View 1 (cartoon, helix red, strand yellow):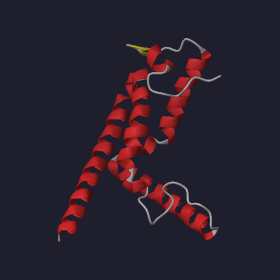
View 2 (tube, one colour):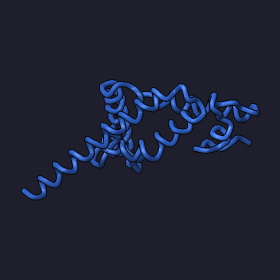
View 3 (cartoon, one colour):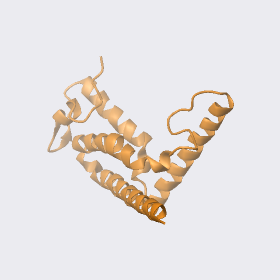
View 4 (cartoon, helix red, strand yellow):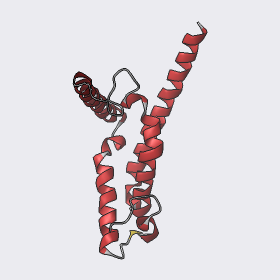
Length: 144
C-alpha cells in the first residue's frame, strides 16, 4: 500500500530542520512522487511570460480536445468547452486547491525549493490581480 499524497502526510512529519529524512522506502518514494508532480506542473514557477505561454498552450490543447469530443457527440471534459471558462479563467482556484497545497508540502519536506515556491506564489498573485480586474470590468459593463 502506498501512502497518501497529501499535505501533512508522512513527508511533512519526516521533515526536520534539515529537510526530508525518510524513515522508510515508502516515505522516500512519496517524496519522489511529490517532486515529480511538482515538476509536471513546473511551469507554474516560471517567469510570468513563460508561465503564460504554457497556460495558453494548455488551454488550446484542452479546447481542441473539447472540439473533437463535441464533433463525436461526446460529453465534454472539464475545461475543454471553449464556450465556458477555460484554464486561463480558473487559475486562482487551481492554485488555491491543488498547486499551493502540493508545493507547500514539497517546501516543508525540501526547504531548499523555497525560491520555486515563492515564484509559484508570485504567479498566483498575478492571477488574483487579473481576476479582480476582470470582475471590475464586468461590473462596469453591467452598469453601463
